[in-house]
Length: 336
Ligand SMILES: NC(=O)C1=CN([C@@H]2O[C@H](COP(=O)(O)OP(=O)(O)OC[C@H]3O[C@@H](n4cnc5c(N)ncnc54)[C@H](OP(=O)(O)O)[C@@H]3O)[C@@H](O)[C@H]2O)C=CC1
Ligand SMILES: CC(=O)[C@](C)(O)C(=O)O
Ligand SMILES: [Mg+2]
Ligand SMILES: [Mg+2]
Image (cartoon, rainbow, N blue to C red):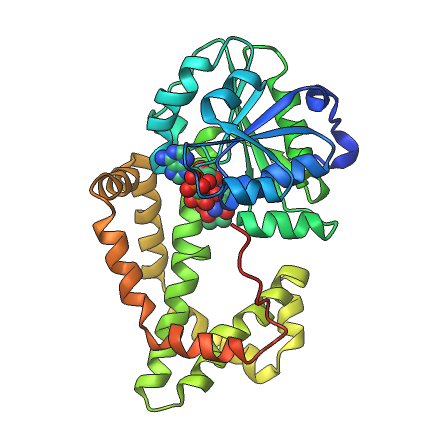
């Protein structure tokens, strides 16, 4: 049976129209939620830690900024959008003491609730609305009049209105323009981690890097390798996004399509898929979450090493030079 999809016509903003929504944080997701909700006519306040570097940016965008404690005290809905690894401490210190009965605690990702790192009191609603894309794109598509698909889940329904509120929230950030469907905290957490690791982020970056390195190590010009293995990915993916595999294959040459069928399975092998299954198991058992939290608690030694290794890679240095020569590629600094 096909999933039930919710669109603008199916969802009313009424359940949150007169409520105050606190967005905690002003990073990738938070700035997009705050601005989209505000532009949907809803009441928003941003909660930031003392001395926050983001305060000026949020105020510049016309948003009211208060402390995280005050935001939780005054709001009816508290959406926690700071990095997953930092959420439990901020929740315990600044949110939980002010989270009175009947309020709603919301998340953009189920990580902390699913892995038992945040245990909300029984008398509040707990839901998630997870847009399926990066925060900066959530804002960009909304401002363009479009939307980003999203999924929502209710973990606790203390007021009897949690589901209605979650859906209204999804509409407020623009997700019902594109389609929203219901999930659970478990399903959202596991599929989101799997998707970003295996396909969207880990899969794509390492596929591109291996292709680029293969060409450069064989003596081809890095600029050609960049166009071939990175820049053109967007053009091909745009076609897949708009028209599926068949539509993309209609646009490419027969030569390319034949090579796709012959070589694709040599690159992404049965072994690759077996590894994907292992990756999924590590996510399901909490092994990945443990490794992530352990690195975070030591100040991210592993993550920082990876970041600095890649910074000086030819793919990144040649890429920056080439992008600087293409004025049509957005030169805007990311707003947050
Ligand atoms: N990035 C994305 O596109 C997506 C993220 N999500 C989820 O959304 C949530 C937020 O992720 P993301 O937007 O990437 O987060 P960011 O890393 O962009 O969050 C940065 C914000 O968090 C604040 N912050 C960081 N640490 C603390 C702290 N210890 N106490 C108080 N505030 C803090 C920062 O405050 P300051 O300004 O003071 O530095 C800043 O405003 C996560 O649950 C994530 O999984 C879900 C879908 C996509
Ligand atoms: C952007 C998004 O959906 C991710 C990849 O899941 C994330 O940033 O965590
Ligand atoms: Mg995601
Ligand atoms: Mg994610």
